[in-house]
Length: 176
Length: 176
DNA sequence: GTTTTATGTCAACAGTCCTGACATAAATCG
DNA sequence: CGATTTATGTCAGGACTGTTGACATAAAAC
Image 1 (cartoon, each protein chain N blue to C red):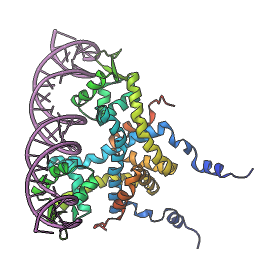
Image 2: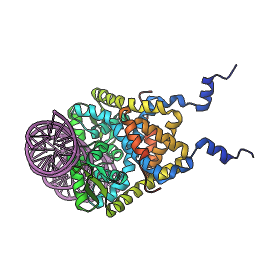
Image 3: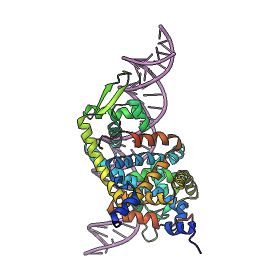
Image 4: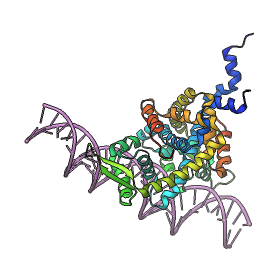
């Protein structure tokens, strides 16, 4: 009997046909919950010491990643209201971590950047988070990391996916 | 020149040696952020309609998963204070979604279960979340799912990992 | 019989998000 | 130029989730 594509696929994947069972999906959901909680725990500690919360981290992260981003641009990424962002941005600005300058073309815009101090703090937060991620990536290996990236990317809504992935992958990275 | 294991690995993995660069780690962190936001968005909508929040979902989920769990056991899993849990559990009990009976051995304990109505509601929430997860799993394929599971599991603290993974993988599953 | 344990509850506060309403300055349109 | 739209700010109020601290009760354990 010839080797059918189905047979070959089965041999290759083992019992992988079961990867869509209710059980696996429930396990996947629980892994998301526990992994995300662990993922945020390290920076959360540092933030709390300085009187900030997770929202401040997100703002610092995306401003650091896209220096000169407008308030509207940041709102778009974060998916929150301007009132919520304002409450986060005000202390960060007052504490000298974030700087805003009027746009050249459009002087209504406030283009946001991190100050030297802001870069240092954001770096410390990123470092804490990266250690955990690096450990997980290293121990899981490159193929697992590729799988992780594929699955997480596909979890994002189809509509927004291209925009988000474009931002995740295409922006400049000063560290390299 | 013979095909060295390294060469074969490189051909297979492409530039996978770079999977631990700062850039990849930052991308991984952003994927976690966006994926988790998407991951919670579907049940969040349903919960909001009924006047509940994400915390109610988590309680319903883990009670449904471990029927007869004690309050202390649930607190352990959720990692919150009893006051926080009480605020979530009270409306769920009043609304007839959660039932609690005194433990047989230890009558101080309140062993929590879902009522018929609670199971129905939890099922609806799970269904909404599972659809997204199933789509991502299906489109990414079994190998990617294995990688996703490995990476997320390894993100959990070493101390708590065994306990958590034991719970994620070993508990009974009524749906199968 | 005293102490510990499992749980409940009241109070106060912090952080993050929301909606609604109104204000200002700059760009843009007609 | 005047009217409108856009980018942003801000005040007010409310909801959800988490915290700490303090105190209460009933049952188990020593």
